[in-house]
Structures are given as C-alpha cells and as structure tokens.
Amino acid sequence: MADEQFKRNVAHKVRIGEIFLGKPLLESDRFIFLELGNRKIIRTNVIGNIVDKYESQGDRKYLFLTLDDGSGQIKLKIFGDDVSKFSDVQQGQTVVVIGNLRYFNNEIYIAPEIIKEHDPRYLLVRKLEIEKEKSKNPDVISTGKEQMMAVKDKILDFIKKAEQEGGMEVDRIILQLTDVSPEIINQEIQKFIEEGIVFEPRPGKVRYLG
Image (cartoon, rainbow, N blue to C red):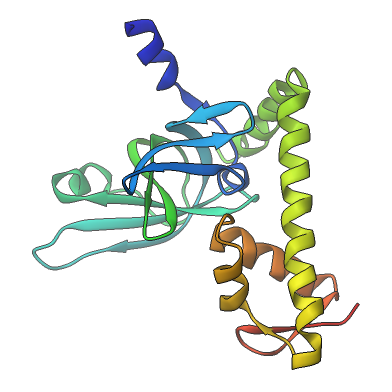
C-alpha cells in the first residue's frame, strides 16, 4: 500500500502545455488527479521562467506567480504562512517547481512545495529530457498530438461557422469547449492570428480569414 501511494504521488516531469491537454478528474468538485495519456498526475516537476509576480499587502496573505516554459503558462498559488517561504522568488528567474496540481473555478494551477532557482540553460535540457522519455512511450506522444489536433480543429470549426454572424466571441468558444482549458484555447487562437488564419476585428472577437 505504501509503495502504491508513493507511485501515485511521484512528481511527474512535464511541460506546462501538456498539463492543459490533460483532463482533470473531480469528485464532488474536489480535484483527484489529472489524466494525461496513460498517466494519472497529482504532483508535477516543471521548470520555467517567472514572468509575473503578485503578492498581497493586506491581512489575507497570498502570492501568485506565473511560470512560462515556452509551451504555456501556469499560475503558482501560495497562501497563508507559506507565502514567506517563497516571497524571495523574483520575476525573471528560471526556477524548478515541484508541487501539487489544484483545480478551482475552471482553472488548473500548482500549489508549490519547492521553488528553486536554476540555470536558464536547463530549460532546454528539460525539454530534451522529456522528449527522450516520451520516445520510450509512443502512446503518450500519439495521444497528446491527437488531442491537440482535435482541439485546434474544434476551435477553427467554431470560428468558421460563426463567420456568417460576423465572427465569434472568444468567451463563447471557451463556454462551448468545456473540456478544454481557457489557457489552451487562448493560446491556440493567438497562434491562428499570428499565422494569418483568423483576425480580431476587436479585442475578444475573432473572424476567419482562411
């Protein structure tokens, strides 16, 4: 039993973009684990750059950090007495984060146990390390790619169909795709804009260019 518990709570090395491809399993609104391919993930080991920091100034102590590893961004949320443990973390640092995944208000985030500064070059090392590990398990790669392609197709299909109405609000796409995180949807729409496939007639609304 102890060995099983240990295995369940291994800190999986993943990229942030992969986390948002996973499916959170909830039980009575309580997060149980993230289903990603054939893995059930509770704890993660990620490396990235701190791109934003917000620390409360009042009696209610909390610290929000935004971590970016090039594949996506995720929030690190710290509350109460734990804030003092991580208040020295600064924007611009490259850090390794080990912590538990949490899910609240349709957002997945990390509750960190450890945040340790690291050499920025380790970002590439970690990327290669994960790719090497995935090469030993082709099913994980295949599942991830298929999921991502399906998400892209769904987003683009919504935008195309809404063209006769003069475009579609991004918030409507998010409401329609309840099984996909808002972060992934926004990131994919931004890629479509950069590729010239869609455009924004105004902020928060997109139209199809083709």
